[in-house]
Length: 208
Image (cartoon, rainbow, N blue to C red; front, side, top):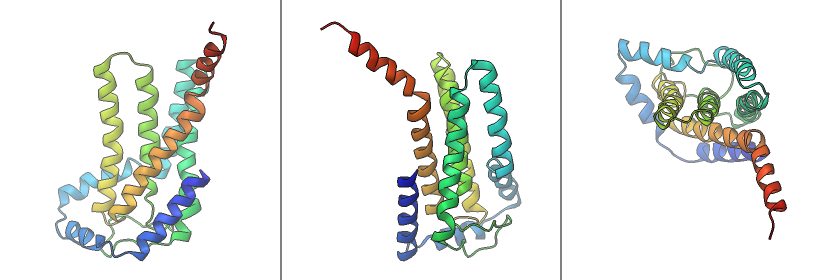
């Protein structure tokens, strides 16, 4: 988490120092807004609103505990979601990037534009749930469906946040990377740790 926070801070400051030209993308999307896309992106953005993610994480953590009769999946999901939140909160204010120079369709929170907390939270939650479900499903087709939905949700959130003038493209891209990093970190530390320990133990007792 410390490494991810340091990387987030460094990349954020680097983006501020470079002429990325992203404002033109934001202006182009704002100029082509329609009532239909305004409504669709309102739904897309709300998929990762903080109250929703907090409530959904708690509900799924309880469900996984009851279904799988253990805490590993629940602790993994909570760790993935909250680790990205901690990295986001530790870096967004000190990076201090202004939001795109277009009309904002949502109320801007007090945090800065970089990185996108909506997107990193969406990756941590939806991809975290997808990882848990797909690991307990043997049907390949169902695994594909789970992952398509798990990936589609963060992408929808990312596009919605850019369309609605709340983030630049690089805010969303780094939010995606941050979310993936937190999912991988939590999976290695919690979901797969015991499996690795069993594999190492079996290798130690295996006759030469």
